Amino acid sequence: MTQARALNYAAFAALMTATALGYQSLWGLLFLYWTVQSYRTGYAFLLSDVTREEDPALYWLIQIAWFVFGVLLMMADFLPGWG
Image 1 (cartoon, rainbow, N blue to C red):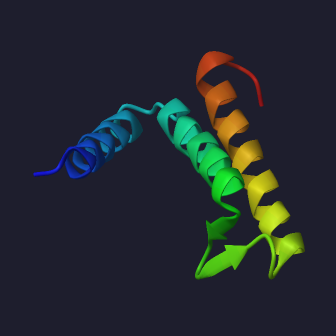
Image 2: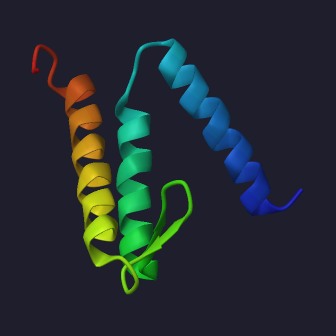
């Protein structure tokens, strides 16, 4: 098994465990990771590829949404009683 594939399995297990225990911050980190990767590559994936060049409005809306979701999910765990 390649290192990337093993990392995917570990990440999936960690996400499922955190969700079962009621923690949302790992999902927040994942959304923030997706935001950074999409910014670096210039494309995001929603139901199909969305590129910064072909559809900049939708691309930036996705970027903003992922960033906001990431921050909100992180805040839900680290600032109890917020929201």
